[in-house]
Image 1 (tube, helix red, strand yellow):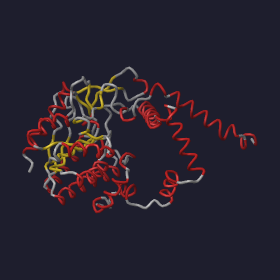
Image 2 (image 1 turned 135 degrees about the horizontal axis):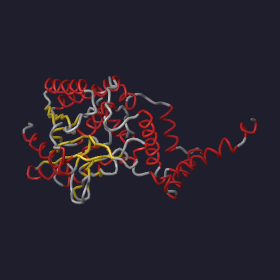
Image 3 (image 1 turned 60 degrees about the vertical axis):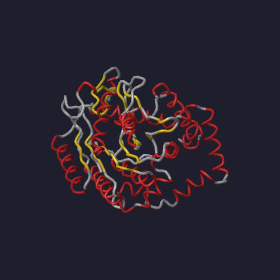
Image 4 (image 1 turned 90 degrees about the vertical axis):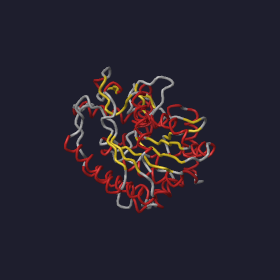
Length: 375
């Protein structure tokens, strides 16, 4: 036991060896972390206008969009936020486009354009934070936001949104987020020692900080596995997710139940978004997104109906445009996805979220007509 307590083999070398073994074990199972939830049949599509993006996967890309936007004449912008439904094209073929690019093409004669921003499994808290950041920096003609019942179960504020510029924008408009505990914890509360530790690591001159930065930079530049740590982390969590589904018998058609506390936080974000757009005098289009209607939905019907009715009621009360597009797309444009269980390796399951390019075109056509009626 004394050997186990003091031996560097067990305290240092064994954990390092185990970590490296696990990294290599996942090596052939790792794609991009952002693609894990899409499945092998759905392609992540973020369009560009020339060299510059018109559909962002992170707020970091706003500066690139802005350069292109100014070169194109700084026209008014429809800001379209969303989750992977907006950037995922099922059974993609070269030359096909998503709804954002299809809408951009229709808007060109009107001296107006669209900027999309979407993140996998984006919840309403994340979309609120995005709106608070993007809207003051652009000539936003209207804001377009889907509200997914699925994503009312999500409560994470992803690291990609926790940027200094985003934090400053949220703090400046804290009236809209003060009561939303999750956002307030990430952006408003002083973190003290944590901030000091981060600053010491990124800019400090202590031997530890200098050594850690050198190690991180050297490993990143010379070891591909180290560079892809976020993707390995995503693969590991996805493996645990598949294990959970296997143990509990969960599949794509399993009914999702409301998580009351998380649902409440996300609904507060919807209310804050309504208030923000009203205060800024920006038209807001909130829509219930398309979903398959040829098979039973994986929702409790009473919960789902109440969700839609509550949003429609609040939109009308705040002067926002509410559109229900759940039955917009025919069955033929929907696809399938990889199995959500370990023993379903070669099986396909129903995809309730992502559709083919024809569906994106129909969604863009519908949104174009809706926007023509928005003043």
